[in-house]
Image (cartoon, rainbow, N blue to C red; front, side, top):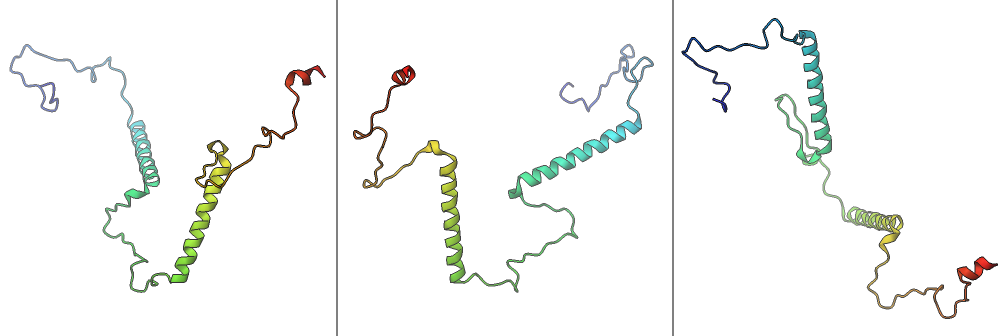
Length: 147
């Protein structure tokens, strides 16, 4: 059967025969055992590197262990763990995180000037000193080239 090659071919007709192209005398030489072992080691190392890379790039997956002798200790939920942080520490932490967020926003604004400034306060305005009516007149390019 084409869909199940593992079943094999069964025939009762003695006139039917097949030729094995792998074990004939004119067949190309097969790979030696040393090279096959080396190839298997290289493929095993590549699989281990791939597993390490996936584990590094996806920390959300977690660690799966198959060895019963491996164990870990949770230092956050143990009986001797320190209690929840105090109110002063929480306020200080919130202040530091707010300052870090503000610095991140300023850095983003500095690195992307094309974004522009958006405001919702109608009392804020800016003045263009180049296109105002009282700005000194500048020479046009044609007149500047003639000089």
